[in-house]
Image (cartoon, rainbow over the protein chains, first blue to last red):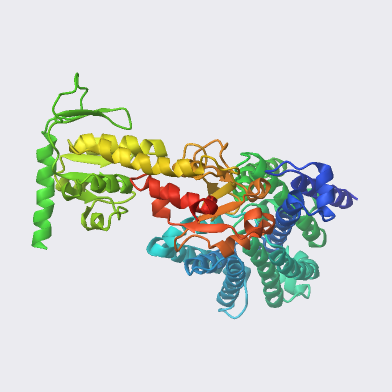
Length: 328
Length: 307
């Protein structure tokens, strides 16, 4: 019952924030014109709504949902509440590939593709490293992810400092690193939606195995869940989800960490419920954050990552304090 | 190796020696009849006294360098910033740094007058602390250009008034051409669109805004709050520019890239294929070529006037 209520509330929140996201923007457009635009009016308002705002809102929903779902999966797999979608090195891999692509002069369609490939590649490396001992233990996944992230961070710094050509396009790199969903084309959106749908379906399929993980890998094994294959499968699902998110929006922090965490308080840790709830809540959260990014300093815009950090960090702290009060 | 050490010692000695020098920036009661000593009011409203005709000049600012050469003071210029490449001869002078000024190099050149753009990081104060005479010259508008020519002429002992007049004549010629235009097309001038949510353009108080005005155009951001405002893509679509102007350099988007941006196909300039590029050095620097810059811009906005 409680789960149904929470899910209904989240769905309403998503619809309301998406509606607000389409209604509110740099240029004031009345609700009637917005409606006309959605049905294909051919004027400037129509173009602004259909080509700029709608893909932006849908992109934010897709990115937020993917990050929160990937966060829920990894927190379950690693049994670590501090896990976020980037612990497996996806952010590092995507950043390196995107920065390299920008340095080589690539633009719109190539950079997100490179970022997605980089994210997948990073997860494969982490997975290979974690398997070196014969079996895939979650602790080595975590360590390999941390090591890869620091190493790639150093490589990116090296490229940034050493490349004169890059220095002149530094704003493009910084803009990418800050994260944002400001301009997303329908083509990008369509490709990302397919990848995210596959990742989400995969995640739901893995839900009951992750529940077994709550008691540790050995217990999971005695419950008939093959830890090796499960770890591999979960890593693959998170790679698809966070890879698509990073490719669309760059590095957007905190959504993948805070949203699944908060939902555990609300509806418990059963992944069959947690995964869909995380997707909807993450989508609503990022659509709202993006709206905030547009409105707070209007007409200038903040990077959406700044909003998620500003709101996410105190929220996360409040959750921690509350949970300690309950436990102690 | 040895010579480098000697050079280092020389710089050290110079620095020490110049610390004891007289402070040459001071409020002066009257202006003398002969050109020197000259007391000048610079762009930060500081009163600067140039005691005698300066023989060793350092210019920190590409537009200043262009003025000094236009005034015939080029042979006396011993150091320039890294970006000074107009005229070509200017780039052969000793370079004293770009975004960050290399103080040791400036001091080692023993300039008796340093010209500099405004700096907010304490560069001017540091140069003064090294007992150098610094004149801050930072033209930001078309009307500043003639004023700059006059000021620099007085500072180096050349006929700045004549240069100012010839510059003004050329600007006035363009103004005369565009004075009676019946339409003033909406112009969007792109500075940087690396972040598509926050595109930098030019607003009131910027030099390029003046150029657009003289060229007979209407800047779409003419009523923005700052000289270099940021617009969202929505804002640009709404204002529907009839002409889009980009910088013609390797790192800027090409007209085709701009036309392909999401939603931009509805913009008049894209529909009518009126996306142009212009030499950034010509229009970014408020220098002696202002007349040429205004004319180049006017040719984009009102090509019919130049047939």
